[in-house]
Length: 263
Figure: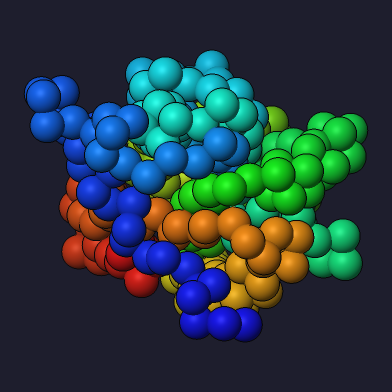
């Protein structure tokens, strides 16, 4: 693969800074930003525009407050494919674009996406990538924290149907992972399974980061296989969970595990 086809990492930063934080005369306009006819946004909840003030849109639709709208407007895209989805890891995104990839045992377990929707959206992903002039790729943080959370969740419930029923809402809630972790911690403590849950969680952080590293290059290569001429931009992010802990009293800042995929 030619060097010129490698990801143009951080190039989008200027557009995002101008579009998201500057609403003055110096903001990105059709005159000072390179134009693209078709823009495809791939990624997780950040790419989808899902968050504390918008929990109804789980993805696959344009959201005015999302960065994808600022980018779309700045580059003058006439066609836009909003394909961010809450909870997506590199595992789920790679699954959606590569028919030969089967994922792992935790595929779509968090912020679930049923098989009917997967089958419907897979061709959309392929077309969106093939049609695109500009593609942004924003995924990775869920590979660590959400993966660790879902594995710890299953380590907690085991075959206990009562616990599973009580914790089911945690799998579908959004926005506040710190609260979800605290709830998981308190439930595990009450059920006398805290050591097993914490051990699984910490082990899963390392496994999740390894999964991210293993998925990234094949995912990018598949995108270029589908469209070798697109401009592909990896969108970095800050780590909003840097100080997250299991509890306020905990000395272990588990959120720092996201540093490896947030930059």
